[in-house]
Image (cartoon, rainbow, N blue to C red; front, side, top):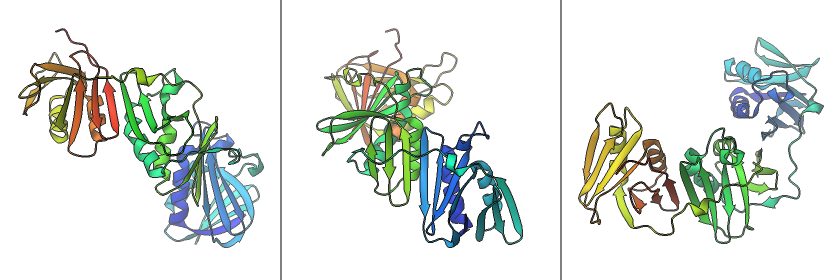
Amino acid sequence: MKFNIEKSRFENIIASMQPFLEKKDASSITSHIYLEVSNQTLTIKATDYEMGLLANIDNLIDSQDGKATTNGANLLNIIRRLKDSQILIEALDNHIHIKQNRSNFKLPMYDANEYPSFPSNQDLQTLNIDTKHLISSSKKIIPAIDNNNPKFELNGALIDIKQNNINFVATDTRRLAVSHIPNESNHVTQIIIPKKAIIEIQKQFFDEATISYDQTNLIIKNENKQFFTKLINGKFPDYQRIIPTSLKYNLTLPKDKLVESIKLVTSLFSNIKITIQPNGLIFESLDEDTDANTQIDIDLDIQEEFYIAANAKYLLDFLSMVDGDTIKVGFNESNLPFYLENGNFFTIVMPIVLEK
């Protein structure tokens, strides 16, 4: 195997492969990047078995067919130190040779024939979702995906395809986040995508791509890239029973003033109480050792005083994903879950229960 390539182009792709490599065990073949040249096209792959990324580079200069592997982290470290000009990559005597002008480097290889295969594209169900909608909808709910929960299904996002809507759902048991888009032609089903995979999808794809799946894998493919992730095998909680069927009050509030006030009173302690009055909102820190409060004057269509208390992070996570100048806040009474909404995105937050 042999090829010449521009350093910057090669570096960008090798860098994008790093999240898909096994980092803890350098002796594993999944710590290696796979390189194959065929008909002046370079194929680069990386996988840790749970996720994988494949990229193609066409029209190579002075190339020879063949395949090789080498440690992905070490390869990137070398490439980054080279100058922005052509580099030569060549497989010789069980080593990858990297050459640029008078600089030479050599890295050991593993048997490329032993490199893990990627899942097949055959017999998969097409997911008819615009890639931009997939990314924007899943991005909104990412903060609510749990980390390292013993219930594995909570460590991912549910794509719940219903007859009329596609719901993107996440919960860490203290809040529920849902973003929805219309379902135009997909069969009713549910799949759970790991959090890490959702983050990588947002990094790798910006234009249109083909999305397909089966019970085990989700595959996203465009002209030059192919990504796969194993799906989480489990049953997502019945999130719809948490969504209130009716709300006593629905208030429209200014987003920017909410963000400013919440950040102001929670600079030292994250739990907050917001008192809702007919003529304004009072924000108070729940820190017993300090006193922090501020107020927004605004006319609200309520006849009595209520309050909501919660971890400010949940509120700010929602507000950071909001488009537009206002949000809706819905609630029935103090100490019950409350509802935050903006367009096709809403979050239900479990309150901190205070003594009345």
